[in-house]
Image: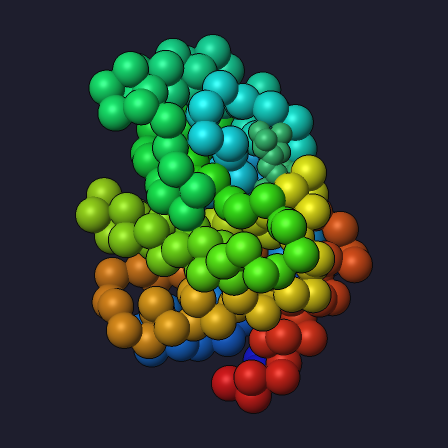
Length: 200
Ligand code: AR6
């Protein structure tokens, strides 16, 4: 575990705290507290719903920051391939955001933990990262998928999120940095304690 000592890979915007960063394979995994819509990364990931038509939480914030172009692009995708199933991911431009792309993924709704929630949440991270590699995306920011309106307990979601990303980065080259942009201190602390417990 290293305390984040340099910000050379990307500029973290709207970040009000220092963060943690570790190296996994050839990639960097970073945790910050901040607003994902302001990140200067190649792609930000949206915690969307299957309709891809926007909503509250981070989805609402991304659609507002990106502007109407995002809605139009999402409409096109739904017209072509239908709604986005839970655990899958699709890609659009970043509209007016600093990020070039938005990867929209649909997290599972928490039903108590025995409805495949961990597997589906892991698929969100894995499929988003696969899509990133396919689009030559080098830096990608994730929110804490499913832990708002979808009710997934943060401590449990953090384990799935960190482990899925770690496993992916250990087995795939091509991503320079994955940043978890966590909306408040409590969520950040959950992710930080999981990352620390792995003793990387
Ligand atoms: N930057 C980073 N994280 C954020 C931001 C932001 N600007 N805004 C909120 N969060 P949620 P879900 C955090 O509810 O649980 C939508 O209506 C938030 O604190 O956005 O996957 C969709 O349309 C929480 O930690 O997503 C779906 O219907 C995390 O983002 C549904 O909500 C995820 O909370 C998806 O629910």
